[in-house]
Structures are given as C-alpha cells and as structure tokens.
Amino acid sequence: MNLENAQLEVDNWIKDHGVRYFNELTNMAQLTEEVGEVARIIARRYGEQSEKESDKNKDLGEELADVVFVVLCLANQTGINLQEAFDKKLDLKSNRDKDRHKNNEKLK
Image 1: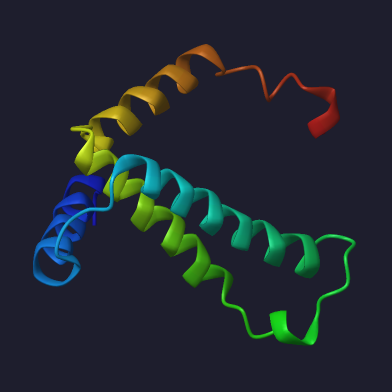
Image 2: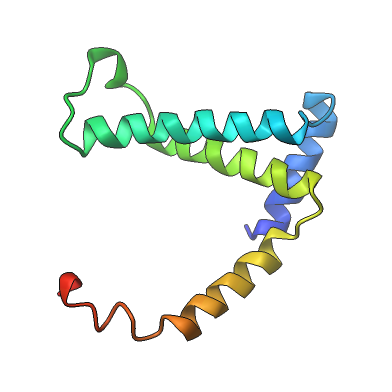
C-alpha cells in the first residue's frame, strides 16, 4: 500500500466510522500522546528502564500504527499529499546526504 492509498483508507474510515476528523490541534495532541506511548515501550523494552508488568503486553507495532494513523489524518485535513511529500523528502535526503552517513566514523 502506498501513502496515497493509506490516506484514502483513513478518510473513508473517518467518513464511515469516525463522524468527522478531530480538529488539527486535537489531532496534534493525539499524535503527541501516541508518540509518547511508542517512547514508553522503546525506553522500557530496548532502553535501560525496567519494563513494568503492565507494559509487557503492549504491542509496539500497534502503537506505531496509531502514530501513522494520526499522521495520515493530519495530512488529509491539511491537504497534504503525503506520498508526494515523502518522495520529495527521500529524494532530497538521497542527494544531500548521499555520502554523509558513509563518511561518519561513528557509524563504522
């Protein structure tokens, strides 16, 4: 699935199940909350914090999908074609940074 299709699927879901989009500020708060949930799992599962028993069944993939869903909502409601924006960004990074990481001694 490409990002354009994902945006369309989210838009259809909102129309069929969600009544309407939350406003942009509410979705920004939702995004922050979802990123926080991802950070909590990463910090405890892969970082140095101990994982609480209540966090052990948390699904990182599900939380990452929540982040993507809200990003797609924000793109839809602000008129952004995320596929075009992503392709443009990847092209920019590929040209601008083509040797940057290869020459980074810290990554060797």
